Each structure stands twice: as structure tokens, then as C-alpha cells.
Length: 244
Image (cartoon, rainbow, N blue to C red):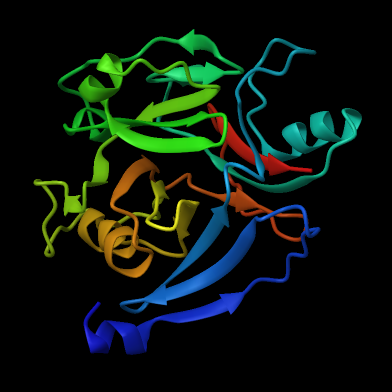
């Protein structure tokens, strides 16, 4: 990282207390004049899961509060949650959605239609203690049966290289969320505090957080929750959670 960028980097631990057995860490990262909420977790220690349909109602959870209540009934506490990938009308995941090893929506190979089809796109997956962000066609060839997976697009960073369509001067400015798998083995979810273009957002993963592979999740609706904070304004088609 350039010295100037290093001086701009500021980390402030959020007021979230987790038990010693939980590796989840929540921070605010300041990079290039924008604040980002970063949730870092260890897939071998933290219970990271993906949710879509409430088994009681058969309908999408849609909100953090509904998921929080469901987990409470199961004797679990929601520590962190954020939106999953891009969804279609009816709060249906637009691409691959896997829960507990079961594929609820199939992989999507569309080559046109918004950010999702800004190729290359990819899949974020969890398999036991392993996690990855993998380009969609490469993922299809892997001998992999994930426990949880979501497909979205575009890929922000692939093997340390930014998406070829991103430009420093890009004029599409939105609140954005994404997920990366980083050089320290940790998974990092990132939600911007304000509107940024794809280029600036992707460089946070590559240059600040050292994530060689990262996937865009969604735009203006992006939000997160902790026991103290809930920034959700719109319903979601899928939710990632960390609970204890």
C-alpha cells in the first residue's frame, strides 16, 4: 500500500462484544475519504450461515428482525448479518443459492442484465472450515459441494486484479456491499457508509484489506445489523448471518 494510503487508513473497533470462542471482529475502516463497516470472521470458528426462506412460513425472512427472532427461538443470538447477493422479483435469489448443502436456486449463466451479468461474476461459498470467492464458470468445474453459497456479480477482485470494466472515474455512485476472502484466511464483509463507484469499492478489498478475491453483493439496499445497530431500510432476498 502506498504511504499516503497507509496514513489514510484508520481502524476503530465498533462496540460489539463477542465471546472468546467467536472470532468475529467488527471495525470501521476509513479509506480514501469513505467509511466502511467491515465484519471479519474465521470460517473455522464462526457460525456463518445463509438464510432465505423461513421454515415456519415458507416465505423469505426479508428482514434482519425476522431472522433474529427465528434464531432466538433456536436458542441462538445474532451477532452480525448482512444482505446476500442480487435478487429477482418476489425476493428470489437471482443466482445460485445453497443452504445446508441443498441448492434452492440454480446457478445463473446469463450474459446480460445489470450488474449481476457484468462478467466475470462469481460465487461466494462456505464448505466446512473453507471459504472462497470463485468465478462462475470455474466454480461449475470444481468438485465442490458447499454448505452455503451465493452467486452475484460482478467480481470485484479476481486473483488480485480488479474487474476489467472498473474505472477510477466511474460515475455510478451507490452504497455498496461485498465479501472477500483475504490473505490471512479470513472472510470479510464490507458495507460502504455512502455512495462509491465500483473502482473505489474494489480497491478497499485489494489494497486495504488484502483480499485477492472479492465479490459484489448489492447496491443501494445494502445494510447490516449487530446487537446494537440495524441499518436495514428495504427487504432482502437472502441474508448472511453470524450467530452463537
